[in-house]
Structures are given as C-alpha cells and as structure tokens.
Image 1 (cartoon, one colour):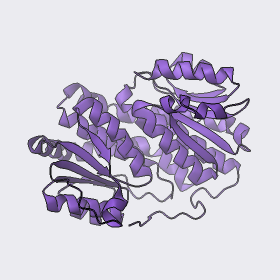
Image 2 (cartoon, one colour):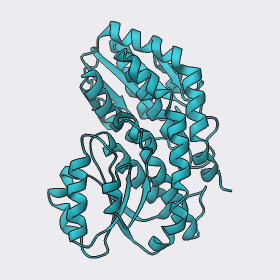
Image 3 (cartoon, rainbow, N blue to C red):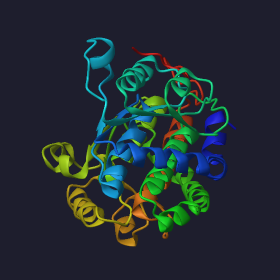
Image 4 (cartoon, rainbow, N blue to C red):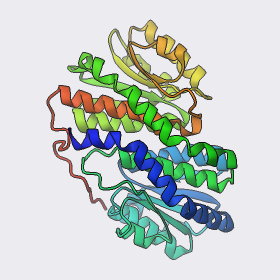
Length: 345
C-alpha cells in the first residue's frame, strides 16, 4: 500500500485526534480574535494550503461576517511593498511551516501590530514560531508528496476556529461528528476503484464547485495534476457558464461537487445542461437527483451540513486521483518534479 493510500484512510482518525487535542487552544485563540476585533482577515498560503484558505474565505464570510482576502506573497517578498495590515487577523497556513513567503507576511503583520495565527503540522517550524498564535494540526508525518490528511486537518482547524469565533454551540457539537462523516465518506469512495479505469486515457477534465466547495474543485484539480499529469481546470459553477462551458462536447469529462445546500439547485441545473451536451459527468453529492445525472458518482453522507461538506467532498476526489495514477502506472508517492516541502519567496 502506498503512503498516499494510507494517509487518505487516516483522515478520520487524524480529525478525531485534532479535535480532541486542539479544541481548548482554538477556543482561546478565538477569544483573543474577538477581543482584537479585526477589520478584515488576510490569509497567506501556497498550493494545497491556498485551497484551504479559499474555504475560509467562504466559511468565515458566511458564518462570522468577516471580509477574508487571500494574500499576494510576491507583493511582500519580491516587490517589498508595505501593505497596511495593523487592523487585520493575518493567518499563515502551511503544512510544513517552512514556506518563506508565507512566514514573511506573518512577520510583517506582527510588526505592524496585527493579530497573527499560524496553522501548521510542525510545532517547531518558522511559521509556528513567528505567529503570535498557533494551531497544530496533529496529523502525524505526511510521507506522500501529495497532501491529503493535512488538507482535511487544515479545513477542520478553520471550521473549528469559525465555530468558536461565533460561539455557536450547535456547530461546535456538530463538528464533533465529523470523524464519523469522514469515515463514511472514505468507505463510499472505495467504489471509485471499480470505475476509474474508464478514465485512464483522458487528457483533460473540468472540475466544478461553488460557494463553500469552490475550494474543493481547486483541490481535486491539484491532486489530478500532481498525481496523474492531466490538465484539470477548476471553475465556479457561475464562472463556468460565462464562457468555458463552450468547451463541452460529447464525452468531455466533468467532475461536479454538488452537496445539499444553497448551491445545489444551481448545480442540478448545470448538470442538466452538461447532459444535454453529452458530457461525461462524475458527481460527488448526497443528492439522489444529482447522482442520477452522473455517469459515475460517489454518494456523500446524508447528514453532513453544507459548511462542513468540503472536508468530506474532497475525499472521493483524492481517491479518484490516487486510483487513476495507479491505473496509469505512475509513482504514487513520488510525483515527477515535486518534493514534499517547496520553498518559495
């Protein structure tokens, strides 16, 4: 068994351990943030962590009414601009905690008096040491180059932080059920192995999400690129209608993330249009109606709320990328040209 497959299957236990280990720490951090009362949130990240930041854009905006922006690291490092961050909550997200440009933004922000938070899987990393506050993912060593368990741990950290920020007891209780939801999703995703061979020779795929699961489309696309060396383009359902839908013809593969929630009616409408054009639709959803519009699908847990759905919805995408890479004969744990820690400035 590859490290990647092991780490995909570890995600339920990782999340369970994280919630038990970090809940009190996250509650204290949330209290400090409320006292600081930031005017906005700025998140610095790269790669997979940047997709976690996209989730936070929607989650913290919807639940905590906070304006969340993604940082532009080159503005700080290459152009050495003095961005005004003194009134912000500045979050650096990095699996390794060694991304120099992410750390630099946190350093600049802290020097200006901003409240700063690092989210990493290494308590001794430069980012963990630089930020005023730190959330430790407790995910254990991630040996595969392609991140899986650290990504869902990052999403869980952001969900827990937001629930504590809003002091929402109902959501805090719901998040404790997440390990069971993730475990059920992993079990359901085993079915991918039965039909992934159908896509062995595809050269391109479109990935569609919206709202909270816009981040999911980005993360699954990244996994497909990293592991399968296939051109995967991610789109918001809304943006896809504004031109890119023209690429769809008979047999064009489209992966659609469509859990129950605010975006489902729009995703159902899009799936109808994709079927009219003869697209090959792969659907991840708890909606029976959505799954009926798919060539192949994975059913998500019926009880998962929309705000937590990205933590589960990404898992069948991870499984798809893993099984497709295996079918293609690629090295699962050593994607060509990649390393576990990438240093950028």
